[in-house]
Image 1: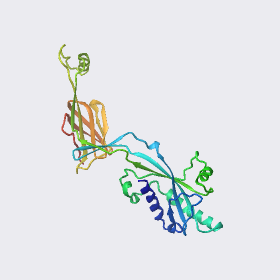
Image 2: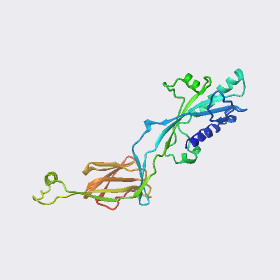
Image 3: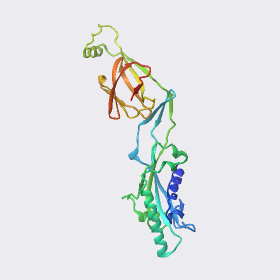
Image 4: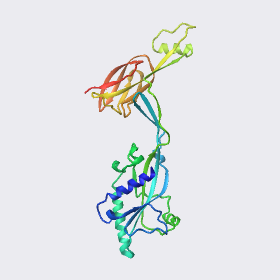
Length: 291
């Protein structure tokens, strides 16, 4: 996947129409003392650092419903890949230095104009990225001493740009299981706890010595428009039970621990609010958002 990231960056620079960048060669070699450009102007993208982007770390799991199954995927590892961008001219002296400055300026303009890598440039494994890889261009790292950095490379200090691209790398295979539309949990709490609960609901207290059971249900459903298209990011509330959730990208939602009964489902979508009646338990509490 990292090699495909490098290919995408090369393709982004090769889209340039202005000279000299349009005719420059894009390389990925280590710009050490032995590095020599080809017989043409060169832009070098040296990958020097790979580490997790901890600010984008997530412990959430993506849940998708389809074909009667539920697919659960652990959040991917967000990896920041940092490149040292330098330009090289075949000319000597001041003419060559000015050519390198011009080339570096054009590279900076292109990189700074992109907040992410365009979708059309993603190939191979990168095509499955849920979000476009973000780019950070020319950010100063206060912890890095560039003089020492170039000494470690075995070359002299020269003008450069730091470019960081973050990609998502899957770390586990997705888990696929049959979709559960309705589940029931039965608890037998101590009799005194049931008596307190029934008193709160103005229900008669069961006689001493009798068994008391509390039955809770898990229900799921799907919110769709009049054409059957899923409606994601819609808020679904059960005011009588003080419960709320939101639909995912496929329009699915789920409530756990519901008592049997007929409840009002209040749905908010696109600035509009509508009420539906759902029964618990139910096979599938699907809701249709009619126009």
